[in-house]
Image (tube, rainbow, N blue to C red):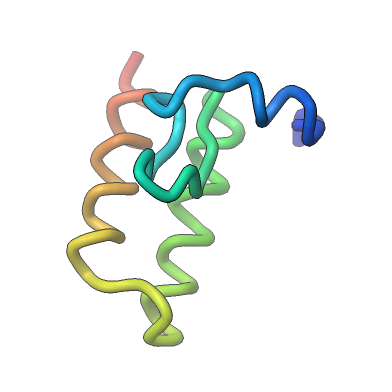
Length: 67
């Protein structure tokens, strides 16, 4: 996976996150989009992420992966 440093993550615009209001699930590239989908799915399975938020992350990741 491509390394996303804290400094680089902090410079990303809110639109680069699956949950922009919370700045969670950064997706600056396809590798991170795939990882965000996997992590959101795991969090939803554990009951730590709502179905609506998981769907939002999935939609954002799918847009990136369809490019």
